[in-house]
Length: 160
Picture 1: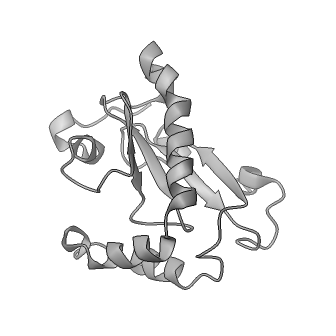
Picture 2: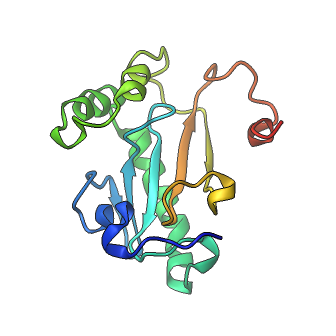
Picture 3: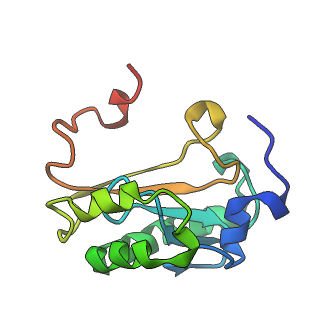
């Protein structure tokens, strides 16, 4: 696995210190945020407070808090008004210099106001797996009937 940036340069360390992206959830070991580059309504990230690159490096306490964080973020996703979430995201000053195409696209989706029908949950553990920030983050991706033509096979369809 690739080496990670020092904590003071790591974007997700900035997030966990409360310096970027408002929390939607927190427990002893993790914080949750809505992804500002959403693939679907409610797309969220769970980030360990400790600077750790791999899920395999979580300590016992963090492992214990892991599923609590998943359940907590799922609950927030299912009780949030996604129209408000994304309209407010477009108004955030801290995002004015970042691409907003995904936010605008999500606001146009026909199932935006629906509760998720399913979830894809995971993480890209290492650069070769597609990770771009070397700080563990768990992806909570709500799925909706009709969000893809044929969901059969799930992530297996990612690799040709």
